[in-house]
Image (cartoon, rainbow, N blue to C red; front, top):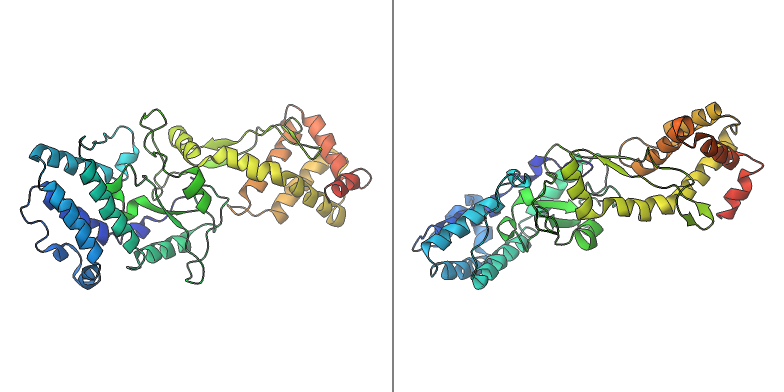
Length: 362
């Protein structure tokens, strides 16, 4: 991911803590685990919780099932519950994952119902809104940290809230279903068609893998430096580069990030292939209006650097556009086809030859 969210946004975790405490009673064999169930929640929250009768009903459904399973299997459920919430240590593939015992589909369904019911309560309890407000205030750019291309909207009731993704997917890790350490705002496409219910901790062959901690410190950077202009496909008679999208950072975590969210594919197909022509047209029009068209490599490199300084924001707002022009500058200076790329850009920026190219895109 491109940046991390503040861990302070996870601190209001009382709903999760209360449910885990109650389930711990059940798995430890407490004869009446729900006798004083409200006491597991903060005193100033108990009236709110008490009014949610569906939560107690879901807890009772789990308790009734747990009461009839052997002690060894209760212990296995308890171990699995703690393992699924061992965040962030669980993100390291060296940390073992406890598995649920086989043969308890009805109990697992009740557990999922409990946490699904609790997840829906994050909204009326305002936990979800308060988490998002803390995150939004800390964002280095108003974009999804997982892709950098989907906008995140302001935390205002007049605007629909962003998706709240189970980073560890709910279907596989239900015990982390309302753990704020596992709940992250994402862009709609990141949460939906791209990540959906992919297993964050295992690849398609069920092999453990390392992933980023959304509330940690490590992240990734993006470089297009080694892309090769004029050597890719053609879109509307315009020759694209052969894109090389390099994601730098912890190699294993980066690989997981790309696999979960289709990062390279989305960057190329949705942004780079579609926008490069527009970006170059804007550059050409700026040169025609406010600069002197270059006639040499040095003049061209100076213009690109000036354009980067004047028109393209540093940081995340225009990070792919910025990387494109950094790449073009690099390829003009030291790329394997530097003469060809330089001549192509000089032609593009020329009043005599460039105008026809710009008009063609209108």
